[in-house]
Length: 216
Length: 216
Image (cartoon, rainbow over the protein chains, first blue to last red):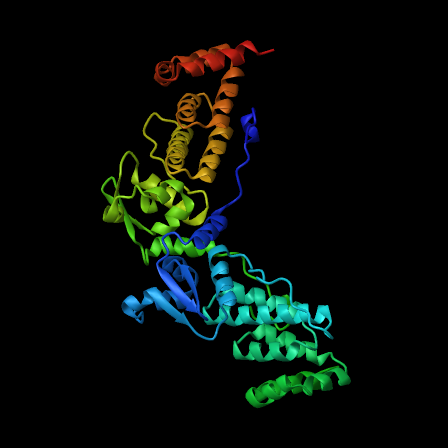
């Protein structure tokens, strides 16, 4: 920024995401705290409400619980997933896994462990995004899960897609299953995850049958 | 979002600016009001502080004036300029003039009136951006003023550049003056704005002399 010719002035890139990330990290002016699995995470109510209709209703809606809105207990979610959700809320950037190195135990393939860790992260984020109605984060998770699907992930992803009304992701799972060999499909269907689908979402089985029947 | 093939899922564009703009417009959870020229404008302290070191100091620093920080009087600024400043703070988008039609009076050229209105807007925004230390907005104003400079604007812009320490913009003004014809330069120097420079910032005259002397 020390040019002699003024025509060379370069306007800096937008920095609102960076500024809000700094706000989230420094906690200045935070007016709500969440207790997640014993961890306390502070945040700013107006930012959360601006980004999530669920937070809007919880923090500013007629259903808000008076002064209790300053200290909120979060159930059924890991602290690192909730923190990642807030990070996305403040920055609009897809949150990286906090532990990028998975622990590989003896007898396990490193690739498999990395994939399983990634899969858990994407599925957890999708569930969190759906719970707080953060549509763009939900789409990003759906896209990632669609693109990196394999026989080890398709069943748990299908269950989540069905439970959280992810139409495109469910289609991706069913289309993935449709093109598997008979033996791969049998492998998938022999798992306990498949048993869970059978018991909980039997209508999905009918959708798969229709797809297979329509196979050229 | 109704595609059959999941590979076609398109992730929506980042929407944080849109969400914060909505927050600014709806005022939900606003915790500070500004009185500007008789107008009241509500905002969110944490957003302002995240984006402006001056607001950070005023709203959360040791110098903050206790409960008085909820209701702040703004002096020496038009309400539409302050509103535009806040709009930039929430969205990172360069604020459009609120009145995009200038009133053309009899005997005036429409182009001149439009230019004068635009010039006032850019100069006002630059002053506001400097006052609240919003660097990116300041750069945008400097760039606009540099690119659309003419003999009617160079002197007032030069004074503002000097007053608000805009190095590149001052260079642009001096370089613009350096390449003017002798008669244009005399025209510029015959104005009351130039008299203001002569009285208030005489060192600028020395800088222009040095530039002219260095002319090949």
